[in-house]
Image 1 (cartoon, rainbow, N blue to C red):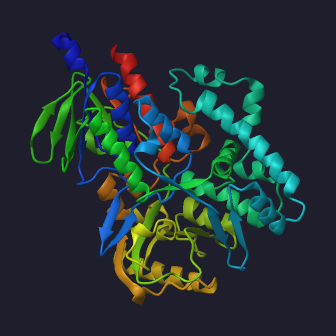
Image 2: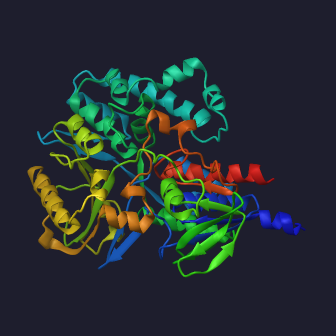
Image 3: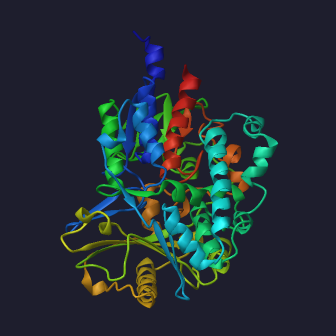
Length: 497
């Protein structure tokens, strides 16, 4: 039998049921903690939510899954098999890129297809592609074996986790763009592989070369769609958490994390109810937690640099979208200038980059027979959140620009064919998920906001307060926040036991 003190110290409250919060809850429960998640919205998932309307089903945020081994590991830790809960559908080609000059480039997990595409974009690039894959594979292995998924208490622990030679191989002192230019010359290849930088809050000319492992991870392991959309995976993980005894309460918005004598004391909700709890994990963005939820301590003196915000459109279209595919990215003609406008000068790019996903192309159950569930994501500068913006007018303007650009590529998306049309602005996203300044992907992954330098998952000033999600370690994206849930649980277990 637990003593009352031990029993009390084994109670954990998690604020937010995003994927990071769900992962932390599962790993804590496996370790014997009593866990309750309090979610403000009426569904779990956070950014990875779901909208159902008119027979159409949309994932609100992420639309494809990478690194399936991470999710297999989550279920394995609980003695379960991922495949017993959800089916993963392989998507190939994984991404097709489009440029204003009419050029296209498809990425594929099939090396034969990939070599043909790269040779078409840059004749003679085959050897460079194989060299890139070998180099990035080593970055990937070193990162995940030694650096990404471990808690570090001191900088020298982090630095010592890899040898000097390994740090050189990781390319942290070169830019992402310079790392790619070691292997390729063609602008379209460099643009495509470098486009991952936008989701990390920078440009390939600014961010460290270690991130060359990101396109490698998808090329080597493919991209996948869970049956039922990404929310099919979220629902599976929610079911696993409940099976293990995690209590999940939706519609429970936290107003304040209570602090007493330098330690967390409990939660106060917007309905004025309260709970006492000695261990609290916030799955709300770290800077949002520190600036709005804490009752007076541990507030950041300097906010981290954040990733861009987004505007997202959800269109339930009658019929098929001619020329469309599951996963399409539309690049500006001058990508470097577009990044500068988006990230540095805070302008909506003159040549709008955007992303279109028609998930019903891979899973017909997401739309009525013959219909198309269309998702459009447009990255926007964070500066809009501090301006007086007519979001409705901006949404109308951006949608027109997207449709016109699609038309130039022979992709017909006529708004008059839409039976369902919904929009989430940066302000909507901020309110819905507690996103700091509307930042869609959490804090940026600059050199001094990665690894040991990133916001730790244990608060430095408040005992019993922990973090999980895109703005803490190890970083943004579904696999990273899932790994982060395990890391936060390990941190708590080490502190308590």
